[in-house]
Image (cartoon, rainbow, N blue to C red):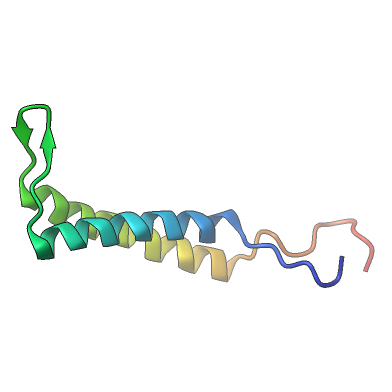
Length: 78
């Protein structure tokens, strides 16, 4: 399996958190209303989520790059 590339799960989760941050950033810029039941969620919630999800995304991306968890496993033939 020389040509097969695998991506560390931390990098995958980084993409999911990044996508969530982008969705909330778009909501902030375009000022979309968000209703949960009869309650309107304020834009400040999306602002906080952009910061939190963005930080998780960047942190997991760096973690995945610094510690490649899907490289060679111990005991595998070289």
